[in-house]
Length: 103
Image (cartoon, rainbow, N blue to C red):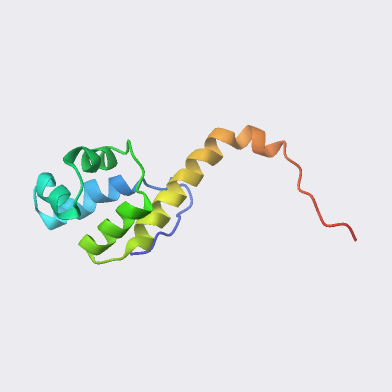
């Protein structure tokens, strides 16, 4: 599963992918998914509700459970975080000059 950034589409939080695509396809209760992941139900619900990020440790767990490895989950989180920061800081970032090495 690629994490291609499509023009005009905001990067998705990994919880959205889990909530909208992965968990419905798996068809198991969220409590069982949390148990299989070795995390509390609240931790899983916070990720699904996009209240918590997917940490490297959680990416390892999700990658194992889903069979797709941790990189997809980490990349989704990184792209989501970067897009949020870019939106929040855009005015400040525009004021920063680009420096070039002296010749």
